[in-house]
Image 1: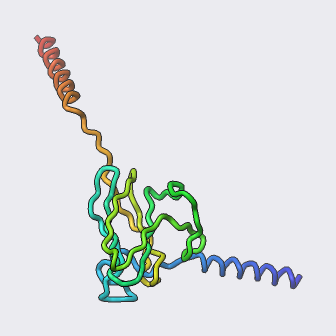
Image 2 (image 1 turned 45 degrees about the vertical axis):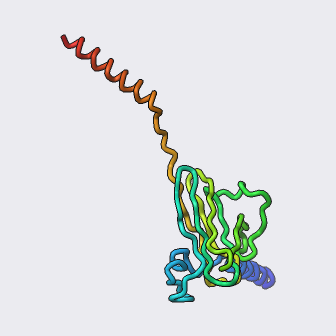
Image 3 (image 1 turned 90 degrees about the vertical axis):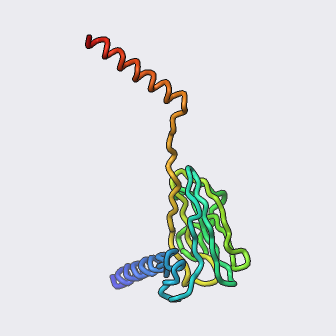
Length: 173
């Protein structure tokens, strides 16, 4: 009986320990890194992403790394993992996947890239030389696809409305 109780406690301890390892507490945000308000490095601007332009089905982002060591920004469109070829376990965030990424340092910064998406593109920083700059997924929304009628369709619609108006005027008499 004692062995069973000890085994149950050992299993519970193991599950809790694994859960604690799997939870990754991001120390910063994209906005804090950009504004120099990262709690670990107050007053120092860190690696961050800027929105350059959002258009229909696309978003253009600027990746900035003001320091001499590498930072690797992961990105995904519409929250999808399946859009990227092979899937690898994340080297920092246990239990997560390593998405496509772009590594830059001060010599290749800023770096601008345009992404296609239906709704949004997300970027996170969790791979690079320094862990205190890491931030979780930051969302950049694309503009919705607005259907604009062609000129011929507008003329046809106005003609139909005009004819309908004439019809009602004639019926009233």
